[in-house]
Amino acid sequence: MASEQTIQEIEETLGQVPGFLELPAEPASDHSWAIFRDLVLGETELSPREKALVGVTAAAVMNCPYCTYFHTEEARLADVTEDELEETVTVASNTQYFSTLLHGNEYDHDEFVTETDEIFEYIREQEAAAGDD
Image 1: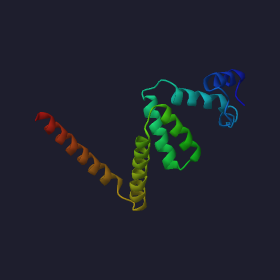
Image 2 (image 1 turned 30 degrees about the vertical axis):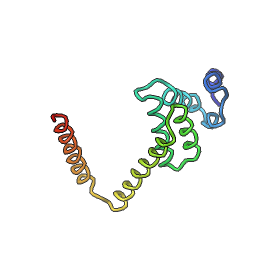
Image 3 (image 1 turned 180 degrees about the vertical axis):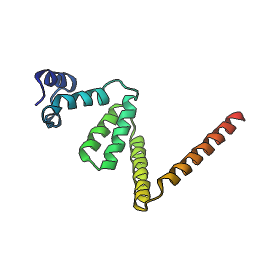
């Protein structure tokens, strides 16, 4: 169980100590809260909106109903629209689809990197040319 100080901080932050934050065994309990607090709730390089969309994406790919519910509500709190949530999950499924194809077919990683670099170089050139117009 988390230290009394951590329990008090969780209650002040979330209004309660949810059961999932009681799951980590010692000595991970205080650290687990700190990671959650600092990454999910804290001020970081990503905005709350961006973090919520990352969470929705990860949850969808992992097929985790707990994470999906939590991060979907987090996203709604950050003013993500239902259309944006649908698109986020669709992009995640597209990534998972192609990952399955690449891994299942044992596609050569070096070839993939080379092709990807060429694609993005081409796109950058096209964007630069469009900006010159």
